[in-house]
Image (cartoon, rainbow, N blue to C red; front, side):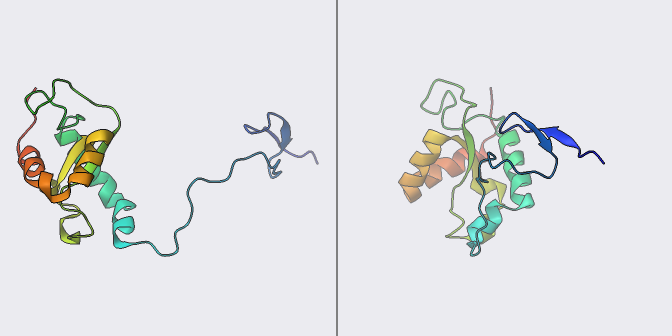
Length: 132
């Protein structure tokens, strides 16, 4: 009986289907035995759906980069969805779309650093539809 062979994407050789050549890199994702409530929310299917709806609502653009909001460019790169009130402060708002806004990585980091100082601005933007 001849063993089934496959082309290995890691070493470039052909070997048996069940053979491990040892070249496969370790998995990036690691099991977290003690996930926090925010970890459970961010890893949920429900969060993925809400996150996609918010990005769609915001037309896949950073709301702080939009013209008329202090910047003069449209930015659709490195987008993330920001919790205006953090999950750790109020879990009940985790999936509330009025508490979520699409931001580029730079503005997301700035919003996280600013904390409460920027919340009213972000709430107003999240409540205002994007007009292009």
